[in-house]
Length: 480
Image (cartoon, rainbow, N blue to C red):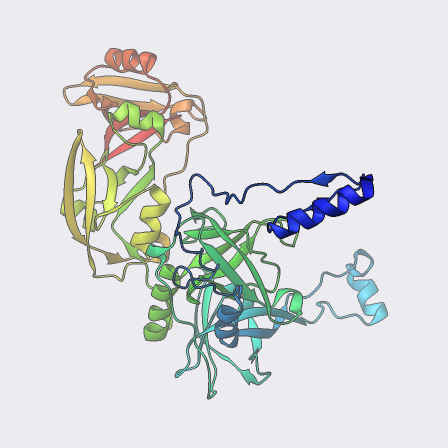
């Protein structure tokens, strides 16, 4: 039988038995493999299919919709703000600073102030009352404020109140059919949570960007301000100020206010958390201004060196440098050398944390202050009092001088070591040691003589703590 006939017969036989044949490119025949079903060794035989990216019951595929539904709910509450304000008059050019030249050319002695225009963003937080939250720096010195909604309606806004210390301001517009953003709960937010930033960057119009919460509790951007910023990598640019930072529930969790960079986004932006903004808004609505609370202590951060020297088990907290006589802290029993570790049961990270939280408490409100004293936990309840502008509770300045007390003449007394004289520009003067101070301990170890003091200072490490009495006050000084 010829090869061609053999090939045809083979096909017929295989077809009769239900087989499968595959011809390869070289004309050879590939015989069928057994009917085998392959399974992953880790897969359950009847495992349901995975659900879609956006919720839904297992096994029910859900189409991915991104965040469009959130954006649709949020954007009607975010507004564009156009501001006109007076700016300082420009300086005269050098050639016209001579009054004779000014008279010759008919130039006035002072140039008139000029009007400047700027743009920013805002968030409607009360649709019924027409309240709009924005940044202080957006409307500072404004002579005219226009608010434009997403539907392109424009209204003139009035200022309800401003608070430079938190860089927040509250406006009011008279309008119907407004949409307000609900306020979120910062205690439920964590680093890594997704967020959206909505605003009016560069005056381009409403823009949405996305990112995550990169960090929380950032500070150090506003002089004498109250800061507890949310850091985010969602793009925030000039014009976003006063806009909305929202979570994936469509709730307001922050007000973008600061960026780091050469004037545009580089992935590091900061927002005032809603926990601070809601407090400020309430006070601005009720009083038109914000009243700061104080308890009458000077404080500083606890460093690892301080913690070791004071026998603490944590590097967190705020060391009490001094207590003002007659202040709420003094009346409650708080002393210099105490370390504040909790406020109303919530842990304290550092001095800025204490300052922010006490400063935003309504005067007259009672708070519980947890401290560590001599290695033991204690708690004091006191009523926060209203602070005057010059009485803002702040962290004590860090001394930046040599690390030994020198240039001070000391004498021994039954109570401790008395400072008789402090040389000008000496290390002792640098840490604010003063004539008449009575040094009673070093790192909580009592001293009675200058020799003991010198011995303890000679063996002490950095961040040494001096306990002393000054007039009728007990306080501590920290050597660098």
